[in-house]
Every structure is written in C-alpha cells, then in structure tokens.
Length: 206
Image 1: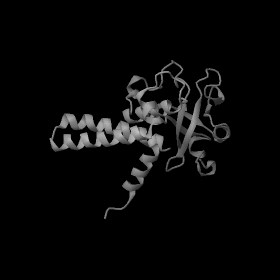
Image 2 (image 1 turned 30 degrees about the vertical axis):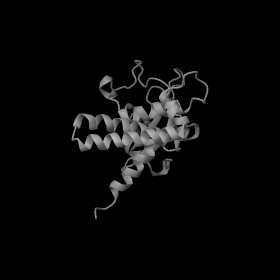
Image 3 (image 1 turned 135 degrees about the vertical axis):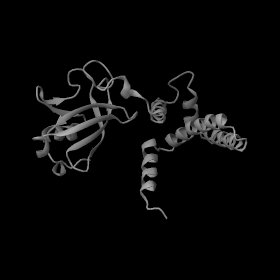
C-alpha cells in the first residue's frame, strides 16, 4: 500500500506530512506529522498513527474512540507528504468538529455521499426491516433495477429531446442514483468508476 523506503523523512527532520481525508465524502479531516514508526504502526494495524511533538507516537482515537480506519495511503511526488484516505469513526478535531478546518471544509461531495448511503443500505441483511427502503428494494430485485434503469434512461432522452434543462438535470440525477444502485448490486464501487475515468483521461489524445 505504501513503500516507507520511498518516503523522504529527512526533509521533515524525521517526519512526513499526512493529510487525512474522508474516503467517502472527500472532506479533508486534518493534517498531522508521522515518522517511520507511526506509519509502520498504521500499516500493521489498519488505523492511523501519527507523531506529535507533545504526545509522541499517537494512535488517533485511542482515547476518544474516534479512530481513522485506513482505506488507502499514497505518497506525493516528492515523498515528503502522504494522503491518507480513511473511514473516520467520529470527529477528527479535538473541538468535536468533523474536520479541523471547520464548517467550510464540509462542502459535501453529493455523489460520494449518495454512494455511501447506498453502501450502508446494502449492508443491511434482507428481511431485517419490516418496511425496506426503496434502495433496499432495488438492491434485492434485479428485475426492478433493470426496469427502473430503462425508465430513467427513457425519461432523460425525452427531456433532452424537449431541450428542457431543468428536467434534464432532474432526470440525470435520477439516472445516476439508479446507476449507482445497480453498480453496487453488481459488486462495483464509485471509486472503481473514478479509476476507470482517470485511466481514460490519462490516455493520449488521438
């Protein structure tokens, strides 16, 4: 996941800068320092560890319970900074705020938030709720998923043919929701779609 030998700890006098980002929403949670020992502990446990001038080796959430579970760790081009995509169990900031950067950092990635909600719904065992949500019904019924995808696609085509911008926006949103549900039901994730798009964007123009 992360090659510690490729990091430049000397530049930061034994540490690198770590930017913690919520993997689901894209919100930047906090910035801290980590040395080789902290990152080794992170890799070994799957939870973020940092190095603080006052705390020393610091397991995030060890006291509060607000741990940060690692999704991915990526070094920057100079090897002196690490992007940690995490799943937080609670607020990142000691003030109780989700992000150390305050409310201004919390502008949501609506698509990521929607995908996270769908993922939560998909984790609920079938039959656990007396009245399953619409998302759960779609996840459990392949024919209903396919039917709704067809309907929403047709409605988008009609709105585009009518050149109705407001309806087109609404129909695109509806289609994206149903597409994300279908993606989840097929075992895919929004991050994987993003990777496909990133790969395509990186191809040389023809």
